[in-house]
Amino acid sequence: MYAVIRVGTSQERVTEGQIVRVDRRTEAIGEVVSFAPTLIVDGETVLAGPALAGASVTATVVGEEKGPKIHGLTYKAKANQRKHWGHRQKYSTVEITSIATPA
Image 1 (cartoon, helix red, strand yellow):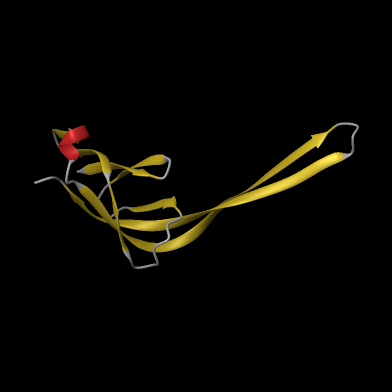
Image 2 (cartoon, rainbow, N blue to C red):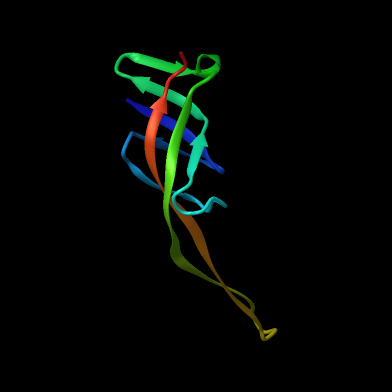
């Protein structure tokens, strides 16, 4: 069984016991979080749309980490105008504990 969950602006395919890196969450390490699934596949059964009312995916926050550093440069030729910038995304690591289908 697996589920597709929406995390921020992206979607992740998850199974029970899987550790997933998601956009940074405000919950502390060890807290339980819940995600709303957009799709659940259990063998031959596929649940999507209104059939998912009452379904949930629960996870435990395991830790936090940083993504790779991204460097950028903008400049205008002959104007002596340069700007360096960088960004490093922060992520939360969660472990999927259960996928609950609607009753």
